[in-house]
Length: 69
Image (cartoon, rainbow, N blue to C red; front, side, top):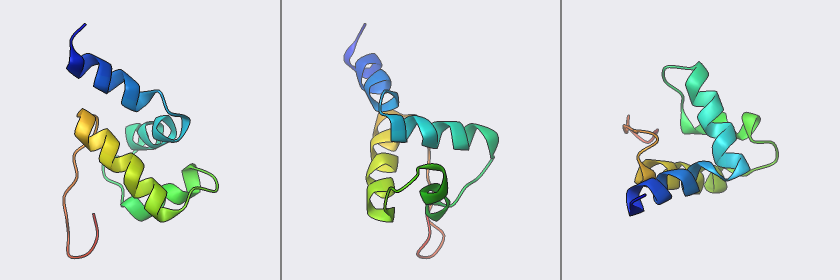
């Protein structure tokens, strides 16, 4: 297993990030602000942090539309 596999698996191992991945698997496109509902009591800055980790690992892609991601 190479380092990219470890990064990929490590990113998905967190319960909040796994909830985000599950939400994304049921939707084609989701605004980052929508994840606070699926992730329980997680704040928006924390969701943004988790999304960054998922992007860095290659799980998700993001595009900016004005001030929204």
